[in-house]
Figure 1 (cartoon, helix red, strand yellow):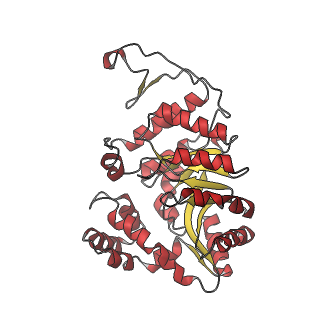
Figure 2 (cartoon, rainbow, N blue to C red):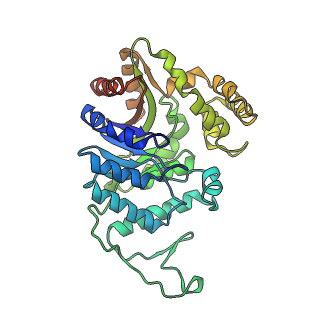
Length: 346
């Protein structure tokens, strides 16, 4: 099992990267940089590539709406080049709040657009002349939609790899099936190993039934906060505001993917309460309403024995990459927790 780590995109990124070599030495295999409505992830990933030797780098995630498919492919090829083949392209649909509210782009057809983006990216990386006649993207642009001067082109540089790994962030049944069919990896959120099969099992099986064997086994990337010790259980509350934000505030009533997930986990009443409180501006009360059982299930916080049990459950659920956020007071303690996790892995 790989150990990953998400890097904070809202704080002092240069300070974060300054300590990254310590995590690299401690056993972190891959780091992820998100792109919300923050600094772009691409410049920061290039910064990491120049200051590390071994650790893989990944976008976690680039929204499919904010770049053309060809630019996404060019960007991935560039990052793969400057990192000597260490880049993984994480993409996803994001949500209408960010796509329409920040980018001013219509949030439509996430499933169809994602499929076409993946197809176009792989065409670019194979250095084929890009020709794509899809429902959402037409390359070259048809003459009746532009000047008529467009012609099929291929990327000038030779990419390091003709198939850069792709991870799809997906929650809904059809999007999860798409990830299992087309991508090297799948990134869910708030992963509950004991309930994952009930929520996503059918979708994963559906997608895998159409999967090209050349893609290999599906890498399942799960993010989780982590603290190891006999006196760390109180840190479970660290994640309460995050879950309250997603379940309660990331979307409107009837259009919140994370609220839907909590309901699919069996927390319908709690999800409704969290959303009502959050949208009413009562954020602390919303955080307090997050079920402790859910927090424990999606976290790696507790004694070494507890973590061994949780790791066994994650392995049984098919998880292959743990994307951990170490919770500790100092940098040295966070690095030590990663070293200990490496020893505890099955």
